[in-house]
Length: 264
Image (cartoon, rainbow, N blue to C red):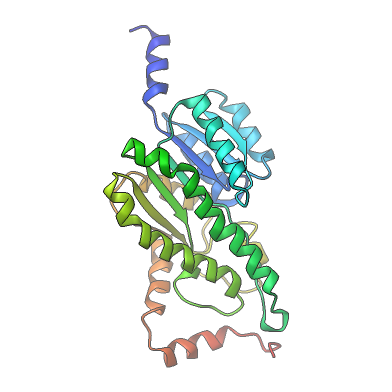
């Protein structure tokens, strides 16, 4: 086999990974980490694609950028069609799109709950729908949902965001066994504090903070491996897991210490 034919063959069999919510933070770091792997192609999607376009220019043979609005099912369907038109396959999707706004009780806003639920939760639901039939027909594939350790238990000022992430964890737990019957792995990624534009909105100490590149490399190492959950970083993640098993009197004694003095 000549060099050109071998390259064509490698591209035909190398995995194609679609990262949705990929123009900044963990998503963009995932694109970089996946492109650092010698084989495989990467599709990056987001509403804004300026940072992704730079990657596509640098890795034109291995990287595709497709604009997506996760609140629009037609947008996701069109993006999936564009991916299949270029690569003829899709092996993995990472559903990472999310928004975050802290909220105090004095600023309680039902519209904020609705907006975050539309992006963080329903955006994932519609992302699953965009690829569900393809993966089931192929009897293989990997779907990863980025939730958060904020979904393990309710924390002050995080009600709108935490509720969406708790819903995602429950969604993944509910669907994983059925997907497994069809040879498809559905998994959940639960990051702790990662330095991103979202965590920049916080005005409190964030223990265990890691950089997006560190989180992304840990996630990429876990791709294709056994296990339902990818916890990054693991140490702080396990601390958060333990909180949800505390008796409520002790749990609330701890979380009350997170309240600000100016909270009514």
